[in-house]
Image 1 (cartoon, chains in turn blue, cyan):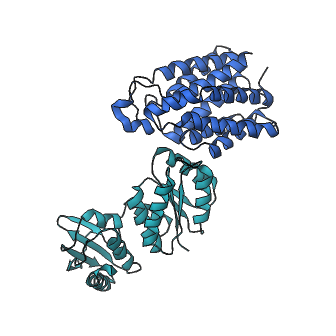
Image 2 (cartoon, helix red, strand yellow):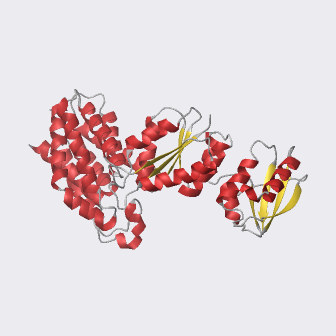
Image 3 (cartoon, helix red, strand yellow):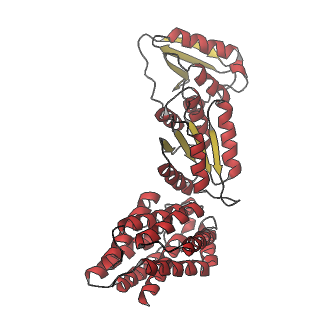
Length: 210
Length: 215
């Protein structure tokens, strides 16, 4: 039992809902150590994604992910557009041959997404960025798949690890992104990108658990 | 057909201002501004892509950016279009001016990118070097516009030209290098040239200084 294109569309719609719900929170986190636009930007992007998916459901999971990627890239100004856009684009490429995504395909997509974010943003773990949520998420998802977990188990492991990873950004001093200009003053704040990555993965996990 | 330039900034005003300043040095170069997003601050992938396409004449485009995410948007836009597009990590204002002058002088895309990054090679003194002393009689010395004028004056002249001021020296075709000398009005710089057209180069520099850099 794998995820079909329409399952992926449902998951993306759930992500859009969660982003809308947390728009103000994400912007407030970004106001503390950034340029106060993360929630607005991401919400604008996913609102456009919903509109793009409303017309017609792409035929494969990969095509859905690619639609998400290109929409985010064109609609989201700021770092979130290129970073999430690249993440979804790499995930689309990694799953290009699958009509349905099984646990291994989901791990491959997450791994490719992380690699894309690192390639685009040049951040490493500990820099206080979304990588601090995504990197442990990928490791945990891979371990869950190795233990025989299904898609729901893999995504739950990823979401749990991302949540811990995001929390762990609070004491860090930012070394990448706008927050890095604050130096020591960036410590004591949750990184908005790590938070949004964690929210996205939780939304995916919740859909998979249904 | 010259290399085009694109200035990517979070601010539309900043991008336009830098493009205006760089364009002043380079009347024949397509310098496009891509600043702001959604009517406010930000960087817009589609606007950057359109600016790159508008600046592309076939000779290549060099893209300069202001802050972090502008680089990512510029990188993605550069990857999405055809043709040789270089995104360079350079000081935005000085880099844009240096790149514009290099493009105006007919530099290829690699030369323009290197000019933006301040990467002109360290001048090496050859044995058959001729040196003259030049007094900067214009008010502001080797400031941005005179430096750009000097670099342009030497376009196509087959000579290696070095400007020295105190302990510092710079390639006379490097606007950033010249600016870095900090030579002001009233200062005296020494200008050395070697190569087949060394004398012509020195004559041009002397004449330009006597004309107060056409200020």
